[in-house]
Length: 240
Ligand SMILES: O=C1O[C@H](COP(=O)(O)O)[C@@H](O)[C@H](O)[C@H]1O
Image (cartoon, rainbow, N blue to C red; front, side):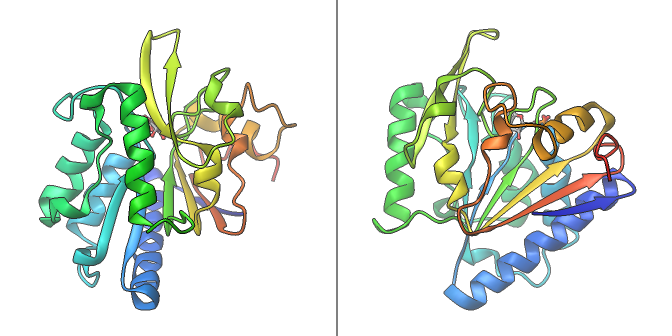
């Protein structure tokens, strides 16, 4: 695990954008394509805008394939849709071929959407090991990542795939990659900034294991590389 700590949120975002482009270039050079599972929520929007605006230059975006680490159970036109956010900030400005974007089919309802997305991912990897080149993750102040929320059934799910998750407090479903699927990735990168996330960062990186309370502790790549991109505020509860 590598901690990349930057003074400001803007520097953190730029650092992760550079890392994203480096990994993408490398994988395209090695395999001819780059597969990435995007994070949702509010933090990555600026990252996608940076990628779309200033750093897009040298990358052959026609070789990039986009998936989603998690999705809210809403239509793709809903303001809470992770797909809509990425479409607006990244896909549309870069004119990404829609055939290279794999949204979670939320129109099917949570259970069927999860099953269909499991199949979509398996088909993309041709029935072989499902190893994303990069999985981007965020961290909620309640220590969730993707839609691995505290005290939910997905936390003990050992399948390599996608599952629906019910969040009783909000009375909504989400759809998420399971931890075993995320952990197969070649590279995993967290983007976390702001003081509000500092305790959660400490829980995941330094505190004793308690998966039910701190689900992001499940993220532990089997063979891949794990990078944290943090600003000083988010890192402020770490001991060193
Ligand atoms: O709900 C979500 O939360 C986390 C963190 O989001 P943020 O809004 O606090 O940045 C995110 O990683 C996840 O993809 C998203 O669906």
